[in-house]
Length: 134
Image (cartoon, rainbow, N blue to C red):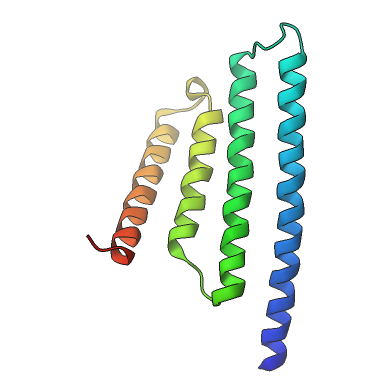
């Protein structure tokens, strides 16, 4: 069993390093896109599509940071924090909602997304409340 634990520790550390590299690269890309969009004529004016793309990229970096945090906690405490997982899921769904064009979606898809958001928020509330009683 010691070998299996060592193997798991090595793999999670490799994943942590790879995720950190991806978060750094994504951050550099966000910086590059912001600079490029701001300096493209008309200077300092962004179109709605550019703003939505930027917000989506910001949230993508935030998702990466949250995942990085979750893996770090797993390495340190050897447990998965449901609150962190739900937080990542909420950010991912929020990102999808921000970049989604509702005109191109059916009512069923929009209702499904609404149900997903409601389920995640309720789950997050229940988990958070169980860890931090009033």
